[in-house]
Length: 125
Image (cartoon, rainbow, N blue to C red):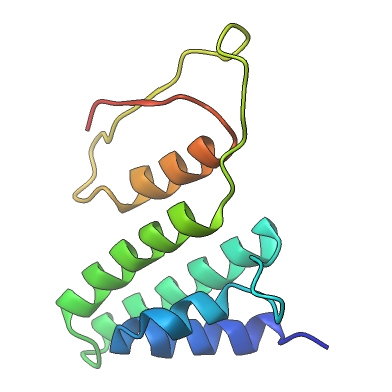
């Protein structure tokens, strides 16, 4: 039987704050080494990042750990999400930009999911 979402969240949080890339990956893969379902992956990442953010608010976690945790999650998504093939003619034109925000993490996560869905995406920062 696989690990619970709560166990994966706790494991990912520990791995991210200690920058243990191998354990980060293990938190998002099954025993066979393949990525867990996307909905589960999203739940684990969001919950772990929320807990890390709370740790920063409480003064237990450095801002650099918050930043690097987001970057590592972005890299993990790019690595673990399969890139689907789409026919260029029936693909809608998509662009992404950040408006009224102080960081690009959300944009990067959305971009990773869209690219994994086979969409060509133009970024306007």
